[in-house]
Amino acid sequence: MQNIFDIIKNIIKKKFGKTVKMDTVLSEIGIDSLDVLDLVVDAEEKFNIKIEDEELIRLKTIEDIVDLINKKL
Image (tube, rainbow, N blue to C red; front, side, top):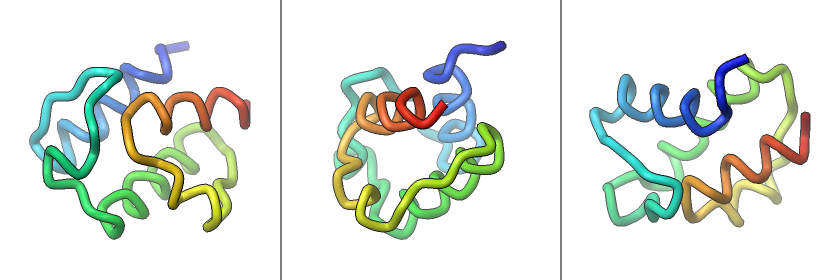
């Protein structure tokens, strides 16, 4: 299976046209809370997981997203 980071990186590239690294801060590349929600919906479908609303507010970096998905798998 493809690496979680690679999958998230590809989703962001397709949706937002941004190239990211693990330490990329979402707000610094113009990804706001609605964009994070959109990204999380795609991640939930791709990985067959459920991310709770309370968890969304803690997602500040790409690494936060990858770590949360990893915990859910």
